[in-house]
Structures are given as structure tokens and as C-alpha cells.
Image 1 (cartoon, protein in one colour):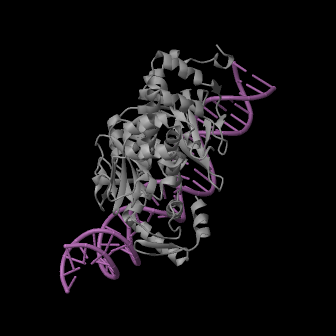
Image 2 (cartoon, rainbow over the protein chains, first blue to last red):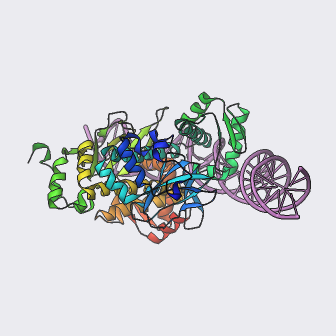
Image 3 (cartoon, protein in one colour):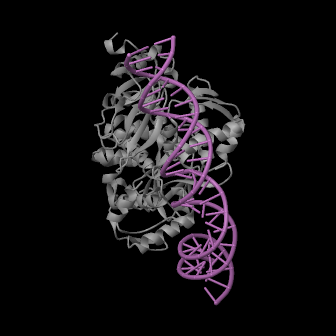
Length: 234
Length: 234
DNA sequence: CGGCCGATTGAATAGGGTCAATGTTAGTGG
DNA sequence: CCACTAACATTGACCCTATTCAATCGGCCG
């Protein structure tokens, strides 16, 4: 076991591997894939995984924790592009012109698998299942991007956001109704194109309607039906 | 020359091929790639390329013309996801679960190259330059998605939109300052998250400031500096 | 030439933003 | 272990931007 891997799991032992990039690889291929992984490192809250303008060399997969990716406008204000949870691929933004277009920062203590990109592509050429899975994950991401921005009302956006979060966590074997928000109201608002105060007021409103209960970062979803109704009420 | 290709150009003769998927392929590979193309068909305004929920089998590249992709919410209203111009890849939305997540419709008479997906992937495995280019194009697309939604003011959004359009057309050898909008005000507004009336008013406002001239679908951009200033004023 | 769809323009309204004050809590250090 | 503090969250009041509804205009197509 190499030193940098001592704190984490090889793909063979990772409970999430069946849903991850190597999901459709056989045992041998998975071993090969595992050897592609340069490191599995832990990063703490507020530490960067990479920063905008840095050269693009590798992609990352969240094994545990949560990461936010954001860009900075010319006026210097931040725009949150995405939140990333376990199984999700980060860093593809840098591919197009070899330079990262966004920064990625940990929202909490996280474990991140690092995949050098060139070797990954080479290996993907020899393992169709991996190539396919790569495209799948990217496609999935693309589709999800649209779901939020298409909603016009603040209520609708927050409901969509909460359902999306809930689904993603559920898919990863976590509770779909009770979870801890790893990001601030500010981050949520920024991501949804709303003021943090609006997010706060919306949580309050949802709570009054009995749709959910929340206390700071903890949240419990009561009424999925109501959330879905709100979410679809574009 | 097969019948369905008689109206259009093979990659070898296509003036855009140096910027297209096969850009980094050698002559032989390009020939192989060209044979992957199932058809190059013309579609007319308001004809669909594919519809939401149809099985995903192939991807498309616009050779000429313009295409809009959109989804329909549960309430039945349309949301415009993207406009596609020559060189742009359409259809990846369907990859994740084998079914198209959006519909694609021609905004004007267009020529579309059709690439069956499985053969494309197989070929990509043997031609690293193509595999790479595929990822590049997807990555590029992903990055561009964020630029609009991050702008909060209507003025900013429209300015960003116009500059994006201008850049994309320029890259394809067309004028960056004079062009014909292939989409309605309604479509623009929908795409930007604005009412059509707001788009109309904004055009009027820009015109009064001397930034551009417009008459219905034709547009002339005068003052790129002003547009860039507006665009960055998030 | 007429009809119809898209574009424009105006007036009133509402949804969400901004600014400012106040609560609350996790984390720090003594 | 407890008190302190800074960062985050909440709440209120006011304002502004963009929406909605409605009317009119203009061109393109048949």
C-alpha cells in the first residue's frame, strides 16, 4: 500500500465503486484502473482542489465529502457553478483549452481520487466500458445543468435544488429526507441566482407550510409531493 | 456518391472540416470517419431532428443552418436549452439514459451530418485524436453553458448572449458584427430567462445608446467595447 | 391583398434584491 | 469547561427591475 493511499480505499474496496467510473469493468480492468489513480487525498474545508487558470492535467472524483466549483467574474464576484458529491467527476472544465475555467474548493473534509487525464484516455481506448462510462457521466452532468436555470420563480428553483440534492444523496445510499447541507445560504443563493436572504425566507416559508424542517445546515424533507409540485410549477 | 449525400459535402470537401470533429485526423482516418456518417440531410425550418423521449442512437453535427434544442416542462411550457450553429454537436443529452432529454428543431433550412453513436465510439477508440476532440467539444460546451446563467441583470445577459453569438459566428468564418438572428425574441428571452418584451426593450435601449442596430432578425453590432462592458457588469 | 404571427410599446404590478439590524452557533483560546 | 467572537442565518422595510397584460404595429406568406 503506497503511503498516499493509506487513508482510503482502493476501488476494489470502495463501497461506491459499483456506481463509479469503473462500474462496468471486470476485476482485472478494475485493478488496472485503480493503478491509474495517482492519489486519494483528503482535503479540508476551504482547501482548493485546483484553481482557475491552473493547467489541466487530471480529473477528480469525490469519494466522500462535498466540493463546490466556482468562477470569478471580472468584477471579482464569485459565481457558484456546481456542488459535487461522492461519485461525481470534477475538472472537465479544463479540457477544452488545457486550463481550468473554474476553481474547486472543499465544503467539508473530503476524500478525492485523482486521475491523470492522458493515462485515463489511453486506458479508455482499450476499455470500451470505461470510455462509455466517461461519456455517460459527462452527459448526465450536462443534462442536470439545465434543470435549475430553467425555473423562473425563486420557490421553484429552491424546490428543484432540494429535490436534486435529495436524489443525488439517495443514489449514493444516503437518506433522501434527512441530510446536512454542506454549503451556506450564500452559496445556495449564488448557485440558484438568488440572494441569500431570499433563500432564508424561502426555507422559512417552506417550513411554515410544513414542507420541511430546517435548522441551519440540517434539513428534513417532509412533503416530497409538495416539493415536486413546487418544482414543476416553473 | 450515395443518394442521401448528393446535396452535401464529404468531410474532405467541407470548408469547416478543419474545425470539426475530424480536425486532427489524417487523410486516411478522415476518409474512415466520413464513412461513419450515415447521412447528411437537409431539414427545413420547424422540422425536428429528434424529439424528447426518443431513443438515443446517434449524434448530429450542424453543417449549415441553425438548430434550437428545448425541453417541455410538466406544465407544458417550453424551455430553450441551446442554439446550435455549424460545427456544433447535438444529441449528447440522450447518452446518459439512452433516451433524448430534449427536442431539437431547425430554426431555418439546415444541413445536418448524422453520426451513429456506437460506431463513432468504436472508431474513437482506435483514433485517439478523435477521442480527444470529442471530449474537447463536450467540455467546451459545458463551459459555455455557465456564462449566461451567471449574469443577474437582463442587460448583462443579452450583451453576453450577443457576444457569444458573435464569437461563435466569427469562429466559423462569418461576420462577427453583422448577422441574422435565426431565432425569435421569444426564443431569445426564453433562453435567457427573460420575457420577450424585455428582450425587445433591451434591443431598443442598446440601439438608443448606439451599441447596435437591429431590424427584426437582422443585427449589426457597432460598439463591442460597450457590449463587453455591459457583459462583464454582472 | 388580406390575415396572422412576431415585434414593439405602454402602464401597472409583483417578486426579489438591497441595506441594515438582530439572532444564533460553532469554534477558539484561555 | 466556559466565555468570547466571527461568521453565518434570520428578519424587516423599502426599492427597483423585469413581468404581465393589453394594444398596436409591421412584414411575410399564401
